[in-house]
Length: 245
Image 1 (tube, rainbow, N blue to C red):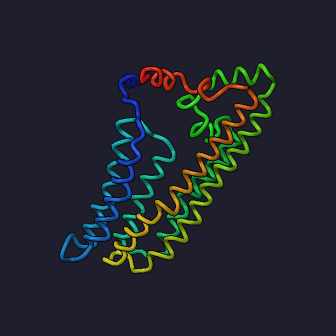
Image 2: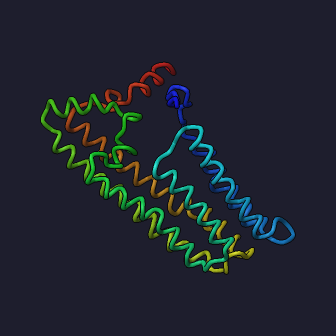
Image 3: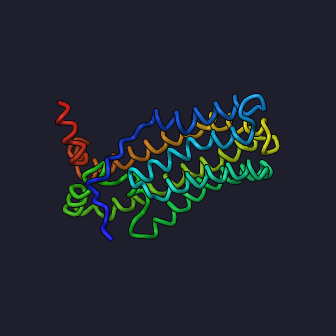
């Protein structure tokens, strides 16, 4: 059996507006506006609404080979939401599910600090963003490896904290907004509202916190190596920037 050629896999380019439209806005509109019997009905609206983020997630997994832990958990989360609605389970289980997914990721971040491959390296300090080899060589040359590793460990704790924040807020929002029995039109509408509200109340603050963590790492790299950001940006990004100029 031949191994797929990595060069044949297209580069994944972040498309935040497409992600927002497909994963948040379209499902929310369908659940909030088309769950009535005069439209799609509660079951069909739930299936169609969740099909958008589920289909988009599967598309990215297949096309870009994004077979990572967080992406898979995201798909599982969407599937569990559909299962709770279709099986007409108590809305309490939706709140538990909403809190459990980011909690699991946060625990995985903490657990990974005990391994050779902490998740913060994969998600924030990685060769797709920074010239890791150049940074590591200079840190070793100046004898700052241990200090940098300690800073990276702190960044991992901060990173896990962002998921703790998401877990708590997800639970609070779910218990506050989704109060109707699952499998009903009201449940769908409340689920759509929760999905819409979660973006400004949870997703945006979490992204801001992650940017602050990246800035913390960058300040550490700057202080220990003396490099500017332009000097340690990943080579492929630097080449793109030069091409634009």
